[in-house]
Length: 309
Image (cartoon, rainbow, N blue to C red; front, side):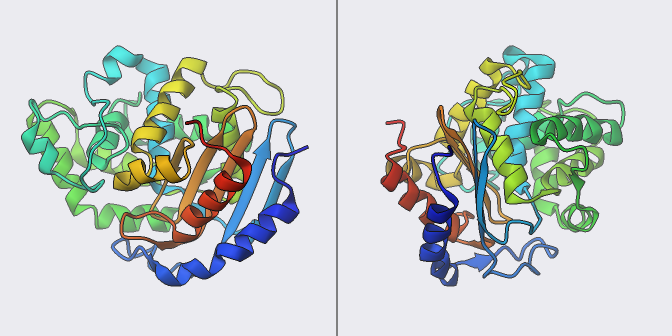
């Protein structure tokens, strides 16, 4: 049986839904500004293949920065740790995820970690492929295996909206190109990056991805490996230290599980030896995390004593 029953999920989601009033939908990406702040959903995918869910579970959304975890996994699989961490660091940042300041302070401009935008761009630049389409297909192939769903794709409208307004990410990319951290066309890199952020799914599909990481990279249904255990470990470590933007330290104290958020309002949480949790609520706090998602995770972590610390 799942560690969280559907009744429990419904109870706690209803309990925290009101906190959406304290947040604001991301409006700097025009396509995300149209999301309704009152929408909320949650799902827990356990190792016995049971997926309990609550709220508007069929509602689809883009995963945004949660894709940074998946791109990191793909780059590690394709190139190994030495190559990846020659282009991006391993340390947390106290600056916002979109900051350019630390790139200017660090020599030779290597991004601090793969969970900030600069670091994610450097990692995305490493995906194999002769064209941006081939790189996107590499990413989609991994995500479809993680979801066990060949229908997964990206939202073209959101990807286009992000591409057309990605002025700051272009600045980050050009700064890193100047310093030799990224290579090739910045426009092609932004094409791949915006499409990976626009990958679309619902909370049940996202919870299954979280369950793979919770199961050390193995399929929660068959126990067959999807990604190497060492890759899953590295990704989960970054989720603990950097996954919730510049709220990561407070989150580690209040919740204490590997997690990653996206500005669409999605969050994944990894419950070791139990399963994966996904939450969606588009109203965000000042750090860019789902207000409903943070409160739900705090309640569940306290109730279930999830903290790895």
